[in-house]
Image (cartoon, rainbow, N blue to C red; front, side, top):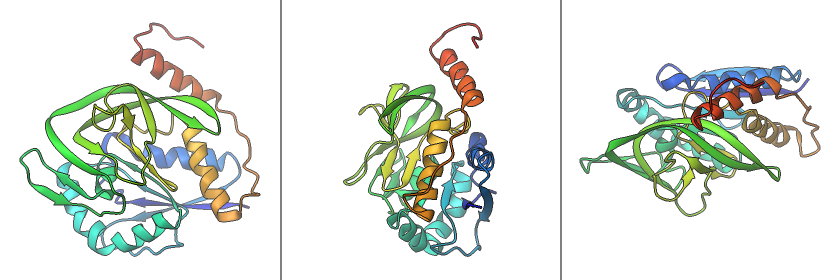
Length: 251
């Protein structure tokens, strides 16, 4: 039986707007395929080394929670996270987790907070928050997929050399409200501002992450089992209809 190990970083501190639902979605769509899943909770004081996990997840949190874990992620786990990212371990990071992987976060007061520096983006905070239901587009295996999301952030993130945007903004602000892009992609690391559990209602992205992790672990010849997305597609359609201002429930 195939097995995946998901490393959930700081689950006791970073679970804003139900970000833990991303881990649950990965578990669910893997287990329905007969794939064994183990979730490792990795928080302050917990050891982790390269090879321990197949997928890493870092959620978002309020400033107070991020301040609590900042020293641990930079000075204790920083080197191994960088090593895993460079080795192609699959990562999904949301909001504060996204910002923390970058070079720095500059508060609207001008105070600069040094971040992990695993990726070359940087973030500048503003007083005005971006709070929106969002629609994005992403290309997955040659297919354009509409994605439903939700953003709530005051940071404006700008990508650096070697990074690509994760998605294109159709409705909402995305990274900074200027360039029309949402999130970042580097090797097998994907970053997003989209809270409210991005994955449960966007199974194409869930399956993309699972497939990347399984093929990395078992080889490119690994046959990724097909699985229906009917229920998730209905949830996404209702979310997209709501965001686009359509009325009624259509099945």
